[in-house]
Image (cartoon, rainbow, N blue to C red; front, side, top):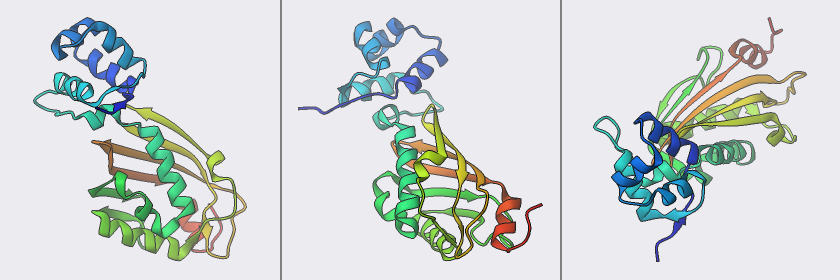
Length: 212
């Protein structure tokens, strides 16, 4: 028996409207009833094979969609990432293995001469090294990190923003650093993460100098 999944309803509707289609148009192209399209856009679970048919109907020459793209919940995955980052630290990728693409691309803001983990990292091995460097100079304080961040879904992607209290080892901060992360997902896996933050404040903390 086929498993049922809820679609990313906002993304599904966005794709339909991008084509200028009504629910009836999509239903006709995918071979289903308008009622099923309405059900899918309401977030009700539907069969995986049905989601595959919807993805095929919504695909174009420039963008081939798969069922995982429509069933992916980017906000939920972003929350998993933040939780693993704070709880498992340097080993975060080990517990996120099922949601990380093997060719994942991390972009960390900052000047590598002042922020040792800044730069571009491609692939899981490189990302692991970045995490090791990050947690060799920074530590996570004992705090309720879940209250520090907000999340918004944008199609298949997610944006995280908030305040980070992660600080240089042995030197807690008096004020947090503002952060903003863009996470892009394809087929339910993280393919790109752009980690932006107040690099001036971050460099000042890491190099133990007053913030400008």
